[in-house]
View (cartoon, one colour):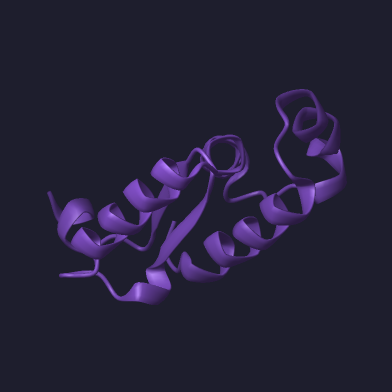
Length: 96
């Protein structure tokens, strides 16, 4: 319950369609009621899921962004977007 009330970040992935972006905006607005906006990260579905997966698999040891570029290519995740999200995720995590 503490993680829901006081998350270190929230990652929202969505289709990059008009409807998907609108849904992402609405969901982010709900979270903004108790989570600071700078802790809410939005991106496309694959970049979002890959960020969460890599965070779970490689934290706290970290991983070179180059080691997952092939995975990004295979899943249509944008490596540049992933790198930006990964930087924000790792910068926002204090005690893990």
